[in-house]
Structure formats: C-alpha cells, structure tokens
Length: 228
Image 1 (spheres, rainbow, N blue to C red):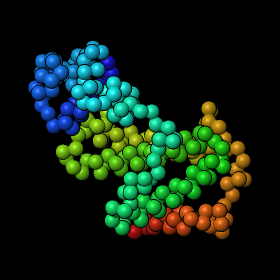
Image 2 (cartoon, rainbow, N blue to C red):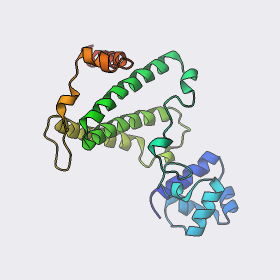
Image 3 (cartoon, one colour):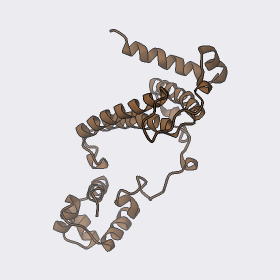
Image 4 (cartoon, rainbow, N blue to C red):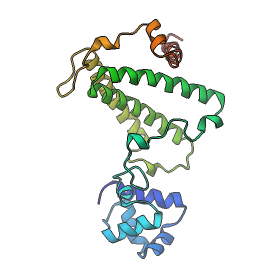
C-alpha cells in the first residue's frame, strides 16, 4: 500500500471516536487484522480499501494520501475561496483580525511584485518558505490541545519543526541567489529587475490599499528583531 494509509486509517477511526473492535465488526474483519492494517504490518486489498472509503465517507485517494481533500478533489485556482469567504473575520477578536489583515495585505504587495519578476523559481521558493512558516505555526497551535490527533500529520512535531527549519533556509538561500541575479542551475532569473523599482512614495501610489499594512509590518518586524 503506502506509508500514509495506516496513519490515515487510524486517524479516521479516532476522529470518529470508535474502537478497533467496533470498526472491525462493521468492516467484516477481525480486530487483530485491523490493528495490523493500522500499524502498517500488513497491506489490505482493494476491496477493503473501498469498504473503508464508504464507511468513513472519504475517497480512496484520501485514504492513500494522494489527496488532502477528504473527497479526493484536486485544488485549482478557481476552487480556492477568498480569505474571508466564510465570514470568519466577523467572529474574530480585534487582535487576531488586525494581525491577519496586516499580513494578508502585505502578501498582496509581495505577490504583485513576484508577478512582475516573471520568475517561476522565485515564486516557488518564496511560496514554499511562506507555506512552511504557516505549517510550523499551525503545528504548534494544533499541539496546544493534547487530545488533537497527531496522526493528522506524517511527521512528528519535533521532526517536522527541524525539517521545516532546514527547508526554509534552503528556500531563502535559493530566493536570495535569484534576487541577486545568480540563480542556481535549473532556476530561472528575474526577467526585468527594473520593473521591481520601489520607493515609499511609489509604494503608496501603486498600492494605496495595502502599502500602510506593509509599512506597519516592516516596522513591527524590525522592532521584534532589534535590541531588547
């Protein structure tokens, strides 16, 4: 099968709040066999995979770790909702809402500049760095509640944090090389660096809705980085 199947099989059962004994009975196998499947000791057949998918209401692709979506959907640009599409901001306390808007507006400026750079490699390295940063913080917040199932992730928290730290350094080094005009082999350079010219004045003129957020983010970040 694969390494994801045992983890996801265990996660679904624990999220459902049922015992191995009851699930095994529902799926028509012994508890011992289900335990072997959940531990990755034995591989199941296609028939059992389909029965599991039906029982838990998920797709086979999700069970196999081929899709992060429970129904196996493949995410496209059109499928991604706007940040506040579910009205989450209206339920947020003031501090989280302001922090979220500060970061989101600053990202709008950053990605506008990336679009001008016309370097797929730079977009990829910057995006991977940011995704890893969000992943790390989500893992830490998720771990606040000790009852949350670690089986949601394929890596343990200590390992994930160290790996992510190393991967982020690689992303930053690659992005820095591209920005300096010395990209690594296989990375495309910035097409026209002059298009990324900016000043505080042009920033305000080009991004009137977002520039103040970015400038505040810069100020807050440098306060955090400065001497205590």
